[in-house]
Image (tube, rainbow, N blue to C red; front, side):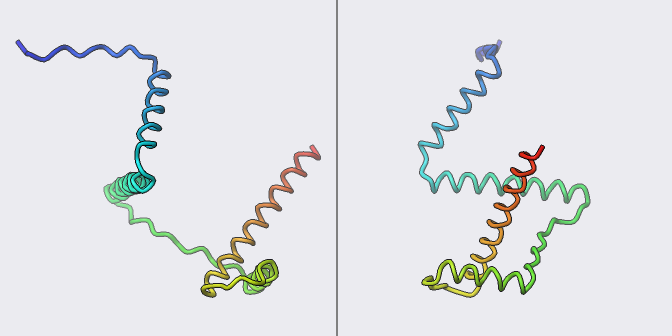
Length: 126
């Protein structure tokens, strides 16, 4: 005969179990420092990507590579650089790359605003 106690049957509603797990996860995250949370999330992401790479390799697929996104045209870059210079005339840029990055971010923000405005207008006209 075994000295082990029989396992208790778990008859908890799955929704209740999920809620308890969510609360427990939040509590454990609150008990850790932001650096510990960041390290844990980074480790988990690395584990997911390692699994993904292993699955691709097992399937005989080549490793994924990221392709750099093409820069906008020189004309567009110059326009947004002038916009940034006009909006932030006193800013001292650390490098040309930082200035270009700020200009491209500004261009993306304006594109998002335009798309949102068009979507709102299209919804209003229906």
